Length: 203
Image (cartoon, rainbow, N blue to C red; front, side, top):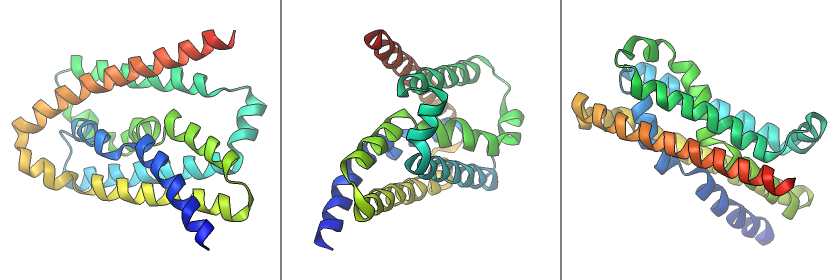
């Protein structure tokens, strides 16, 4: 049992860093700037269900699916980066977007919040490495539990979105939204750069 908790702790830390829910919170607030509180809660629910399903599915079948489809992690980096960059550019350039965002809250919870922001290439790569490292039923269970603890922490952080939005007010949310979209664009460029670098390194 002591070995299980040791593996759990060792798996939790890299997943916590890779998921970075605290760092994603400003982007979440930016994406949900014009949403009603109920729609923001719905967005969080979709995001966490997507993140949980993707992470669990990747633990179970990730290697096989990637191998069958010929997909590498750097392919995921480039694809995720392109999606994020297009979204960030659209949010920065379009002024009247409130109704569209509110209507698409569930979809935004799936992409880009659920993936690739919460569970993206960094988390998937970390899961892949952890599954390779901690073999056996106890080791894999420790990785799964560590992953779901991190998802629960992210859920708690994003669940405070309504309180934070109320505290910031409309003008504060507007400012956070613009800054968050710039950060999102920078993250997108970083993901694309890392993916292209890995592709060139593999040639």
